[in-house]
Length: 234
Image (cartoon, rainbow, N blue to C red; front, side, top):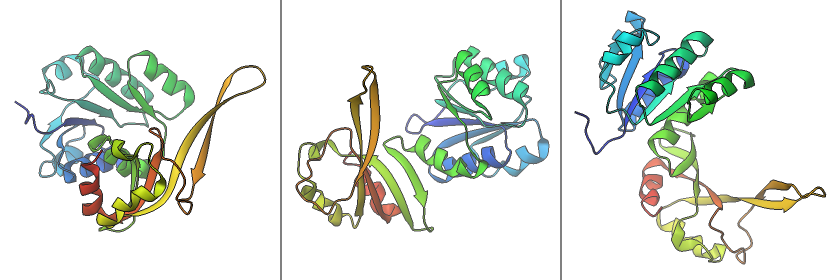
């Protein structure tokens, strides 16, 4: 039985991308199950993951018996074999995994994955695995880039208590030793044909009269521990 205080993740495919995702999720306190058909890769994770399973994820009978009934999020990380990627996604959907994130290598591949039930499709380079893992373990943080082992750059939504307040009210950030670098704002306009167009604007916080909106995203820099404390306001 899974620990109900933790999200349970299952990472399928332990290549460079999948290994990075699994390692970061484990390091950040997630309960992580890793799955691969390569015994060498699985063995390397026996002391890193909660559970390491030697399974061919395209084998319907084997996957049906796998102890993944408590998984909250499955990450289909293999990208070099489209057939394995697609079949694994379909079988996970069949097993009732509530949220499936899949790696795609093309727009057409992404469309196929969406059609068979992937909740989220990512098309990215392998070294982005760390950023994806951070977002899955902490959905209130939209993105997080580790600058050093101690400091990070993070994007997150404006805490509700600041919505409608002038930017100067974000002085509270200083209590958390965080620096507000910029505010990202999405504005919707209508083109000449009547179609909505979204425009992303970056606002620098020099002007204190800027009023914060509920959909604003703040971009901050600080210690990882201080970012974790500030997250509790979200």
